[in-house]
Every structure is written in C-alpha cells, then in structure tokens.
Length: 509
Image (cartoon, rainbow, N blue to C red; front, side, top):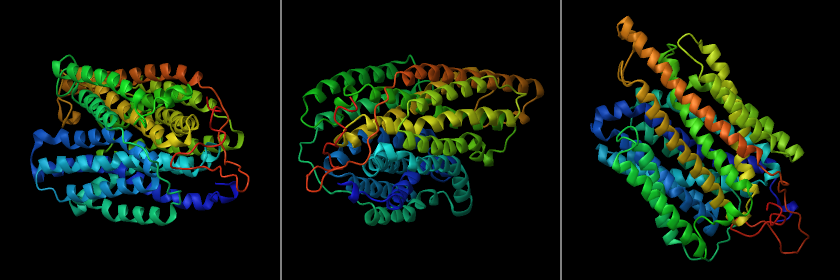
C-alpha cells in the first residue's frame, strides 16, 4: 500500500466510527446489566447464582481474547471482527429471551465470547488503519468511547430497566449491533489476504485453561472462598503450571497463538503489558469504589452513579486528545506514560486521605488527577505496544494488551474487595445498608470502617502505580512508524493479514 493509496483522515474516521460503535456496545453492556440485575433476579429468581451472570461473561471474554486476536492475524481482521459482533449480538438476543437464571448464565457466556473478539480486534483494526505516528489524531475517539461506556452504562441501564423492562437491557444491542455490522461491512476497507497456517490447538487449550483458572481464582478469592482455601490455591497452582506448559508449547508451534517474539523482540512490549495490568487494577477499583464512597459517606444519589465518575472520565477524553496530537506532531511519547503513572500515583494517594469530612468537590479534584494520569497512559500504552511489534503480530499483540487489562481488573477487584470486606466485617454488612437508617453510634462506626476500607484500597493502588512508574521510566523511545513509502510497482506494502511493515523490522528492537 503506497502513501497515495492510504485512506484519508476523513475516511479513516468514518471507518473507525463503526468499530467504535461495536466497542461501545461491549463496554456499555456490563454496566447496563449490572444496573438491571436486581430486576432480573426478581423475575427469574436464582439469587444464589447471581455472581455467575458476571463471572460467565468475564471468563468467556478473557479466555477468548487471545484466540480472537490470533484469528484476526491469520484470517483477516475485518471478517473476524464482524464475526465477533455477530456472536455478541446473538448472545444479547438469547440473553434477553432467557427464561431461567441458568439460561441467562449460558447466554451471557456467549455474549462474553463476542465481547472478547470486539475488545481484542478493535485496537488491532485501529493499528491496521492508522500507523502509530498518526494515531494521536484519533485517540480522542477511543477515549470518548471509554468515558461514555463508563458513565452512560448505569444511566442507560436504569432508564431502560425502569421504562421497558430488563430484557431490553439486552435487546437494545440488536439494532445498534446491526448498524455497526452494516457500517463496518461497507466502510471498513482492509486487504482480504489470508495466511495459510495450522491452528495452534494446543496453545488455545492451554491458554483457555490458564486464563479460566486465573479469572476464577481472582473472582472467588476473598468472597466465595478465603484466599488460603484449597480451591483458590489449586486454581492459582493450575494457572502457574499451565503457563509453564503454554510457554513450552509456544516455543515449538509453527504459528503460535501468542508469539513469544512480541515479548522478546523489544523491551517496550513487556513494559507496556505491566502498565496495562496496573491500569486495569486502578480503573476497575476506582470505577467500583469511588461511587460507593460518594453514595455511602458523602450522601450522593445512587441514581446518578454514572455521573459520579464524570470528574475522572472527562479529563481522560481531553488529555488523551492533547497527548495524542503532541505525539503525532513530535513523534515523542516516553514522557506520557511517565506523566500518567506519576499523576495516577499522586491522585490515588490523595484519594486515600479522604474521610467523612471530605467534600464531594475535593473528591472530584482528586479524581480529576487520576483521570489526567489515565488519559496520558491508556491510549499511549496501546500505541507504544503496537509500535513494538511487526504488523503480522498486531492482532496477537493487541489481544495480549487487552487480556492484561482484563486480568488486572479481575485481580484488582478481588484484592480490593478482600481489603474492603475485612474493614467492614464488624459494624454492618456492605450490601443493602443505608447509614442513615442505623442508630447514631452504629452509623459512626460503620462510616469509620467504610472510610478505613477505602483508605486501604486507594493506598494499595498508589503503591502499585508507584511501582509501575519504574516501568514507565524504562521505556525506550524508538521512532513511531508512519505511512510506508513504497516505489510504484515495488511490491512492498502494508499487509493487514500479516506481512512485514517496512521500517518495522529492527527499528523497534
């Protein structure tokens, strides 16, 4: 693909809108369903299985992510992405029609399979359409999708459930998914080349087992079972043993599911994996416990839970846009993950100082600092990671980065949940408690424990971010790839199905 053949920025934006719409669907879904869960349980029953509605989705998403990413590298990212959207929409239709909690759990797993493909391939498609040097022009679009998904999900979920019933929390995905499919089919233009290679069935089996064991262990630890229970320890041991076996298999595979060369070719990729893991830990923790603190301690309305995150998410959009444009103009990027981790560390430290007298305005300022750090970090991490690998590994690399964020979120929620529940074990149970309904002495004790729990969560998050700052400082700034310049008829081009990008060889190694 010569420079003259490259799509214009306007065409790229139109193509990316369809990709972003499907990505928004998968991000909104969990938030919407979480809001609708009390109504779902009231209709279908099965309260003792409620956690599996979320676990099945998360497990299927995480376990399928590497498979989708590699499939895109082998068989064409556009066609595989469209298949993922179809699976997600089908899972949504089935979930909306579920007649029992068991059916809903199974159909949510189908939804999760589709969501794994959407998450893995959305960033790979962006990498195919836009070279890293030009990526900053479009970062605002991705950041906006993240913000809308986080803030809008609870609001949309509450509105739909209250006015149309919980089944429409799933059915709403059908028309939007159809629009995304048609949009991408006609406007997403990529080469249709397919690679001829044997599928790495052993790698797929081992990776699925490893991710499943890890997600189940972090989901159950500290809630369903103690961290030291034999079930949790056995799952962690299985994940460790499976990882060792997976590495051994991938070394010998002709076309490995997760090529080890993406981790060994340049130090930036493993460093970005660490940063994305930390980003998952902090973002999931903040999104879960900040609204809870504002509602319980500061008296905010639960109906506005999505808006409570606005002070954190708005800076993500603005800063991501500014940082992206600076990166595109200068080609420099190391400063952004350094600034990002530093701001997140400072913001989380300040959040750990909150108590019952902290105003919502002050909390909003602390949240904004975390948002600034996230804006500098999240999109830059993906760009730097993709710039560190060859085009043929773009899908696998993007899937790996997405997987690390998912695992980071699972681990973060598990650890934070354990700390939080330990702090609250005495005065009152966490769920369903309104401090205003408690006697004054019990209310004060409850709020004190609540503040202590959030203090531990954000302090631990700050420590984790401080460690990741060291990883950011080790980033090696190598030139960002731009549009390949090829003489007419030379036969060298940018091939989305796996060819080597000119200049991507050892420039990133």
